Every structure is written in structure tokens, then in C-alpha cells.
Image 1 (cartoon, one colour):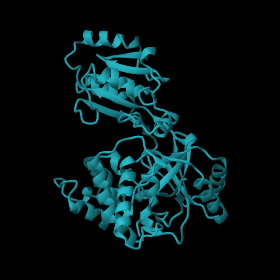
Image 2 (cartoon, rainbow, N blue to C red):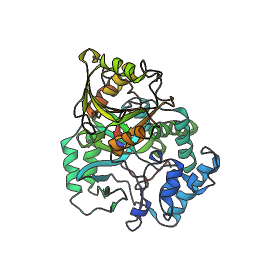
Image 3 (cartoon, rainbow, N blue to C red):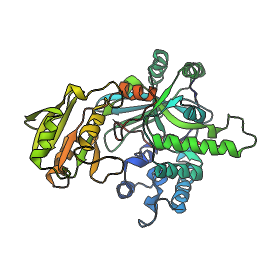
Image 4 (cartoon, rainbow, N blue to C red):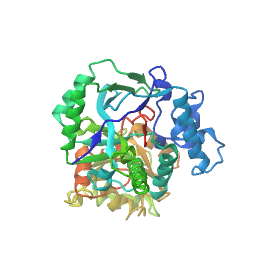
Length: 412
């Protein structure tokens, strides 16, 4: 059964929250992060991507980078920008984008649950990215970016959350991208006890976003367990910072594909091969798929609707995904992209950037063809995780992204 417990968070004082809260470390490259922090000395990017305060030539995995992150975190605490709560709490975290709000519970999930697959994963992780986050956790002694978890809705917990958010929020900010972020303490001790009891009976949590951060938290937690001769299981290193959302609240956007060339195929040869797999119709204007089994394609300044032919659908929950069908029947055999994780000829664009981004990059000549995907559903994600299977890379794009810096959890 799952563990999700309250904790004593370090949080920004209300007057600093808007300046501290920052995009997650992994949605910006170093150059973009350097631009974001200009004029924003309190931005949590100074902690999550501390290379912004060092010479641009530095290796991102240099020990000085992680030490700078620790220094920046401690400065925020010493300057009373981040302040520790008086006792362990659950928190409610709300995000509002385009008039739609999702509410999550902030607490700490269990390292042991991660290793025992009570927390289910659906993506493979890369060792270099894992080790980067491990070292960040080791040196800062903290979880500075929450893992995005989900679970199947529970009406009683939803009711407690609804009651909690009727009070005034502790922090309330609108980020530069227009997304509103709010947080509340769950102050009622009976409510907290009820939440913990209900979640203890939940069979599984699912990693929605943050596979590398959760892997790093679990790896460092296990290291601490082995290194402590007096280990009890209740130490803070046994738990990691997470926001737990009911599945019905989540919004998954499309994750689209761009390919540089046709792998030696002429335009005519490529279209002939595609006709064997899809019912193809040219459409006027941009085409965004409105249902599973449909894909948009942009090539030679034209948009096409691709309807997947029935014989390509299979029973396997992974191979039945639209992104998997595209990979197995188009990207690999026709376009020669056998490993989308490492190929330099394919790129992935989150749906938040819109179809305009696909058109722009094809029209510029940088890319030859774009594929606009219908978003993977949360039901598909959980079914794949339940089956112990792994999604193809870049199958899901969650919006809005959790903000770093609103909650910090120390390992001791």
C-alpha cells in the first residue's frame, strides 16, 4: 500500500513567492535559463540550474555547479526568503491555465514504494540525467523540485481539498506565462489524518512527470539507508517531495514529431509508402487531430489528415498508442529512425508550442516533415504502467508544469 506523508516544508514568504517560483530545471536549456534569471536574483533557477551563475564554458556536471546550487539555496534560507513551517503539513497546490484549475496534494512519497513498484513508472531514464539529479540531491541535501504523481480519484480527499481551498491561499502568484499558482496549508489535523489513512489504502501511485527526479530521490535515499547503521525507516531521506493529483484533474497535451529528411525516399516514394498505412486526405489550414487513430502531417507546405488503417492496431497497450504506431511503421522502417532517444534526425515538440512551431521549422528547411499527434490519455498511461510496460519516448506532455521553489524538502 502507498505511503504519502506530511512534512515540514521550506516555502517562500508571500512577498517573495512570485520572484522565487521558477520553471522546472528540465524545461529550459542553460542559455534560456540565463535569460530568465536576468534581473531576478531570487529565482529558484539559481538553485535548479546553478550554472547560470558560473562561466558559460563550465561543464554542466562540474562539482562547482552543484556546490553553487547548495550555496544559492542556503542564501535563500539565511536571507529568510524561504522559511520552514513550524510542523509537518500536507499542502494543496493549485494551478490555473486557460481558465482550468487542477488541485494537487503536496507531501512526501516513499523511496521504498518507488523500488517496490507501488509507485509505477512508464518511462525509461537516462543514466547521465539520473546521475545529474542524484548529485544535485546529494550536494544540496534537498529535494528542490517536486515529482508529479497521480492516482485514481478519491471523493473524500477531493472533498477535503475543496474545503481547504475555500480559505485564503498562503501564496498566490501569476507567472510570466499567465499561469496562476496557489498554495494552502491543510491545517485541520483530522483532515490530515484522514488523508494519510485513505492514501495508505491506495494500491498504486503513478509517475506522471519527473522520472529522472524520482529515480534520483530513490537512488540517494537508498544510499543513505545503507550508510546509516542506525537506520529506522522514518528518516526524511526515506521520502521525497511530490505533488499528488487525482487523475481526472490532469491535462495531457500532444507531443509532436519533426524529421529532418525522408531517409533517401523521394516525395512520391514516401507518400506511396504512407498510403499503405493510412487513409490520407489533404486539408485546408493546420490540422490538429481530434481523436485517437488520427495524425496530422505537414510536408511541402501542405497539411494532411492521416487516419491509421485498422490492421495496424493491436492488443498491446504500448504498441497500440498512436505514437508507437508512428514509430514502428513510419519513423523506423521508412525514415530510418530506429532509436528516437538518440537519433539526431528527429526532434520532439510539446503541444504547448502549437502547430505554428511545426510549420515554422519545416518551412525554414530545417526539417522536412512534421507529425501532429493526438494526446495520449491518462487512462492509457496508467494501463501501460499497470502492465509493467514502458511508453515510447516523448509520449506525454503535461501542462501546466509544476513550479520549483514553492516547496523544498530536506533529507535530514
